[in-house]
Length: 409
Ligand SMILES: *Cc1c(COP(=O)(O)O)cnc(C)c1O
Ligand SMILES: [Zn+2]
Image 1 (spheres, helix red, strand yellow):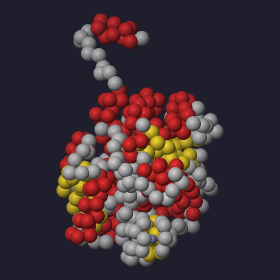
Image 2 (cartoon, helix red, strand yellow; image 1 turned 90 degrees about the horizontal axis):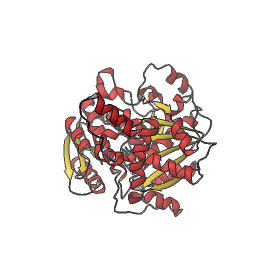
Image 3 (cartoon, helix red, strand yellow; image 1 turned 90 degrees about the vertical axis):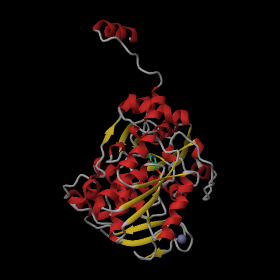
């Protein structure tokens, strides 16, 4: 644990640890957390027997949880594996899949909520509120339960059924807000200020990035303290891309990696304001009416757009926009070529990879990591649409089965 304070991402003003707890008091931009990067970070990490994200505690601004903290101790440690069939189909040197669907609640959001909950405990808070399209809320509900905090979750009415069910199971106070994710976001911010409830809102809480950055730590360590040429990440608010970037910057600063990969952000056509700013060469992210099948990246007024632009620009990466049909097709293609089950927002990264390969931005010379940010079990309706025709029903006889098998081939 080595929390040194925060620095405004835009006006570069420095704040001491207790000076600023959400956005910059001067310009309202999001704050980057400063952590100490110990000279022996690698030795400390490699000496840890912990396989969870907490093995990276020497590079985090919060303490690791205690062994009695249940699910909170199990976040991270997700597998990284090669997807040669996928690489071959796209004509790429290699594709690595980092499967965040295998987090305790099924999405990368567990990493952010775990760190934010540890921060809330350090501050002596007992209640914590967040707006969410679903996954961040589920993750907070679970991590708050483990930490003995009360979680208050605000989601748009339209959240998929599986996410709502999961939210109700972890004992949080759950409210469906009549409106969009952006409306829920504003309500959580207001409730935090007026009712004095600690707020996890993505991006405006500086600690969400500190959790999400651990996916980069893990990726690099799993590759033997090496990075691929490119990392492809789906983008809604832009906080995961910012977290991936921060993790890599920390690793570079600590001397654990020698270079930066290029970072590519993927947005759905119906929710692509950050990509639009990127293409326009602008720093101002426009506001849009968000509409996409990929609910986890449906954010019309992204809460971390500027830092996401910075991640792509500083690393020589880019943004790419994909259609909903390509996202649904990607769910099936990831299943067929890599045996991974992705929710639509996670499959969007694959749709982006397909486009980057087709336009020649990524080629045979590139080793690419694809972040699969959430499991397909989060939205089985979308998976069923992606699968297409329903399977045939047969009589309970070997004859029926063998003739059906012959028919197929
Ligand atoms: C939250 C989320 C994203 C996007 O993360 P942002 O920080 O909003 O850009 C992508 N995929 C899944 C599954 C998510 O839950
Ligand atoms: Zn500022």
